[in-house]
Image (cartoon, rainbow, N blue to C red):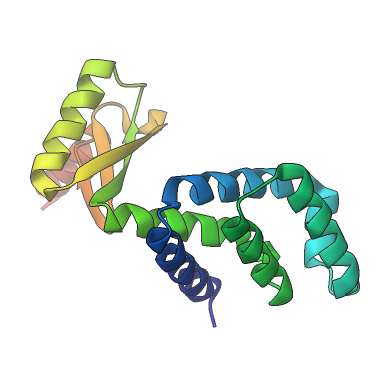
Length: 179
């Protein structure tokens, strides 16, 4: 079974629980902080992913960290489930999928916008507004730069790509001229 399928199953189950308890924002934030903590500490990552380290030792480390971070019971229980099922290494994928599921349920979609240079604030707000009109949903924009675009922007929403880059336009013009 793929890690994306596993992440989706755990994230969907957690999303159902936290939606019922109205803890979406809090649990999402706590798991994001946990993901950062584990990623920034190679020793923790090694402890949780190494099969030669006993479950009891891992459980002690997890319990100590839960006590120190003072997370909600829902978050703590979820982390224990991941540990028990040897899925702590999948925490980044589960957290990303959880955010996606919660956003979908709230009518929010994410768009990846790539431009040759950083975009001015007026352009980003106009772009968010226009994409909201196109999709009928609230749009969260994530920005990246790629100097090879020369100019214009490339926007990806799910599997749909809107390519308004100068590079793409030049490629299309070259294809038309060639043939």
